[in-house]
Length: 169
Image (cartoon, rainbow, N blue to C red; front, side, top):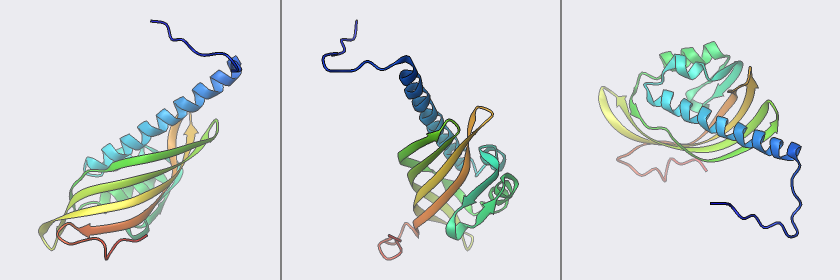
C-alpha cells in the first residue's frame, strides 16, 4: 500500500528539516521512556539505585512536603530511607507536555495520580495522591536524564474521606 500525500500548495521539507523533526520526536519519545522508567522504579518499592540512575549528578528532586534533595546521591538516600511507609503505590503519569530546548536540554510538565497503601500507626491505609510535575531534562553521553523534578502536591489524602477539603489548587 502506498501512502498518497497531497502536495498541492505544500512546500516539501528539506532533508535538514526532516532530520531536525526526527531528532525532536526521538528526544520526546526517549523522555517519555525516562518518565515511565522513573514510575516503574517508584512502583518497585522506590528502588533507590534505579531511581538515582535516572538523574544527573547535580540533579534536584523537590517534592515540597516530601523534601528537597540536591545531587544524585542525596536523591538515592532519600528513596532508600524515606519510602518505607509505602506498602503499595501505582504512579500513573499522564498529560505530558514536552518542549525540546536544544540538542541536549528539554522541559516537561506531567500530571500524576497515584493510589497508594501506607502504614499509618501500624495499620494499612488507602490513600490518593495527586500532583503536577515540572521537570528539566539533560542529555548526557547521548542519554536523557532528569536535571530536576519539582512536584507540586495537590493532595495526599486517605481514601475513606473526601479530598475536597485537602486539595491544593
